[in-house]
Every structure is written in C-alpha cells, then in structure tokens.
Image 1 (cartoon, rainbow, N blue to C red):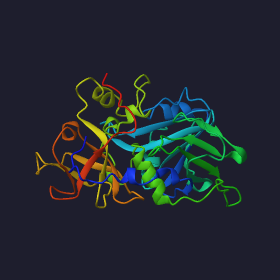
Image 2: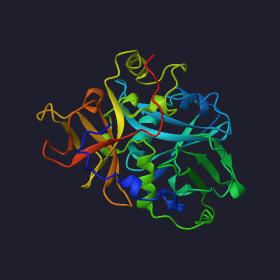
Image 3: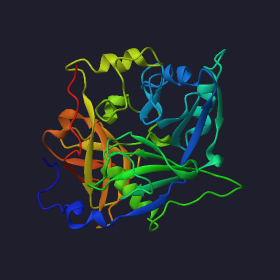
Length: 321
C-alpha cells in the first residue's frame, strides 16, 4: 500500500542492510536509576508496563504519561537486582522526566538519580558480544557487569541495546566493528518503534506509536498516570491514529507535520522518528490518522512538501479490545 507515486524508489530494498554490523555509541540516550526497597513498586505505579513481576532476564518498553494519557517519555527498563532498576530514555527529556517522577516518590523507599555518567550506552547490530535471546525485551547480564537488551530488528537486522558500567572513568566497548550512529538511527526507524523525544513531548497516547503492539503497554496492571485514557483508547473502534513506516526523497525531521491530499488545511499526522537511509532517501515513523493511510497522497511539512510513500510495518498490530 502506498500513498506516493508508484515510481518512488524503495531505498530499503536497494541497500543491503545486512552489511550494517557493529556497535554504535548512543550519546543521545541517558539513564535514570531507581534504587531502594520500593523501587519496583514505585516504577510499576508510574509507567505503562509491569515492573513488579519483571524478572532479571527480562526488560520492558514503557511510557510515562500525563494525566491525559499523553506520553512524556519512553523507556527501555530492566533490573540490575530486585531493588535496583535502570530506565534508558532520550537524554533531552531526562532532567524534566527525573524531576516529574521524583515528585511522586513521597514516602516510597526509592531513590531516583541521573546515572547517565555511570553507564556507556551502545547499539549493537548483528551478533552481540554475549548471546542475548532473540525475543524482544529479553535481558542478559554479561561479563564485567555489561547488560544486553534485545530490541526489535530493524530492516531485518538483529539489534540489542548494550549498557556498560563506567569504571575509573572509562567503559569497555562492545567487541566488533564500529557502526556509525547515523546508521544505527536508520535501523532504529526501520524497527517501527519510536522513542519519545522533546519535539513530540505529550504529542501521543501510547497507541498512536503502536506501543500496545510492541510490548509497551500492559492492560492488566494497576493504575498509573493516564491509565484510564490509555485503556479507554484501546476499546474497539476508538483507535483513530497509528504509527506507520514511510519513505521520502527529501530529509524528514521529528515533529514535522504530515498532510493528506483530502485536506490541505489540517495536518493528519506527525513525524515521530526519522533518519537517512544509507542507500539514499529518508525513512520515518509517522503517527497519523488511520483513514489517511487508506488512499490519497501524503506530504511532509505542507501540502506541497516531500511526498511520502507507505512501507509495510515490520510487526503485526494488536487488535482493539
């Protein structure tokens, strides 16, 4: 299915993504650490995923929402131990997110801190330094305290987040070749899983980024900020916006509006993640009205802006409840 001219090149197909193997530093990400006897209980009560029952061999994709169910941050979280949790998020949102989360601690035995300087974050494409199960959100502890979290593949390439402790001011690097951060960013986009960053702060409820379909929402857990809105959005027939994978000939940027040919006055969507393809062109995750994906033309920035062509999502969508 495509909303762009049939002649639009498929950049993902003309480039062999399997050549993108190695480790890329991820300076745009940071780490919030939650430590204490009530750490799991506290995190469980604030995010969209279950952390109370989280095992040491698992990780979680989760969102922190406003009272209106709008995503203020997203995390990849896992436990160092049962009373010690790391939450990896976009560094541009970390200070404000840490401050908001800290407001809810009250009498809970949990201490929150910015632990970004204590850990080095790497994205590993292809084989990992230590074997990590292929199931997304699996967590493995390797030698020297390294932690690997299996992510969704991008363009068919296996990927993992690697978290390495910094000791004496230095951290070891994952074995293997160095991968350009820009290439990792493209694989990230092609996974179809977008991270919340400053330009899309409070722009979406989790389902607008397909978080319910990629393990980012647990509808059986207890209350958290925005829980009623998120749950209500999942009822059959009420999901009007979804995330889609698109390509374009021109550069795309997070936060850009998307327009549909049926209405050139009002945007139908927003770019949630974007990166250049090594084979040419750009790819992006766009959250937009589901009806806009059915037929017609899509353009970024404005009605006469870069044409967008829809690509298949790399995962199935969970049906409405």
